[in-house]
Image 1 (cartoon, rainbow, N blue to C red):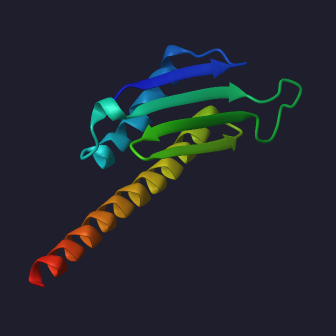
Image 2 (spheres, one colour):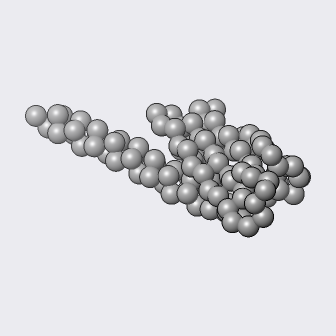
Length: 119
């Protein structure tokens, strides 16, 4: 899985880039059954404002193109690393939901086929 990381209004240091890659690589274990060539993973890290010093200043957003579905999530927080952690949790939830839907569709089709073969 290849992760494209870009930044807007924020200097993307090697430490932040490595942290984001490390955290988002953990999603790979949930996407084992999906072909790697079929996955497009884009992450954008940005600073939403320069005149505010407190509050949700940093934003991390991700767009994953899976076969048959596109997943988009974002997280805003006071620290970019915390925003990346929250984004990972949101994406993990959505990818697990995607896997469950694919599995249930497969099982539904298998049950239907078995029923047709009995007749």
